[in-house]
Length: 217
Ligand code: MG
Ligand code: ZN
Image (cartoon, rainbow, N blue to C red):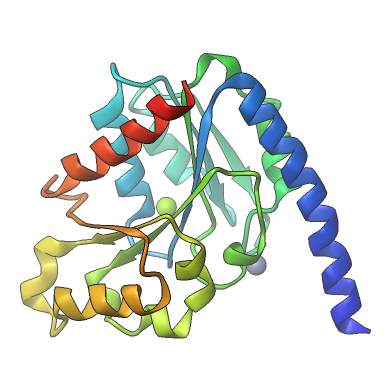
């Protein structure tokens, strides 16, 4: 019985996700869903992406957070249109929350919409938001075992950002081991080791994303 309830919720979610995707496609906007643990640096990656692509691409953001508006304030400080979704303790975004946020955005004015999911590697990977691309943000301080522990998130991703490479020397983590662990579950994903703090390695990520925006425009 329990499983049937979950299936029904996910089917309802998929229907709303399809409607979101039609809205995105009608507006000609590429949508990226960022999934990662709390503290992986998702917001810092969004900040670098907004700073790096502004002037090249028209951006908008949706920030998912259990309670606060801290992350949205960081994006708003960069003069990027942003809507905060507070899940009131909920541990993931779903398609209907995103649909409500879309009502507050001028989608037609955007080329690229970045959605920061709630910090969590588990259930965000089960909920389609209607996005075109899923990006997992993993930080080196989380160790090399995350792909094995949370395979669904990594399998779904078109790209994996390995953040905080500037902190590698403080860890026992080997970048090649992290890359190999990701590859075991997703041989195709583009992998970007970078530091959102220092900016090291950010440009290849920006170019990859900009190419995808151009393909939609
Ligand atoms: Mg954040
Ligand atoms: Zn959840």
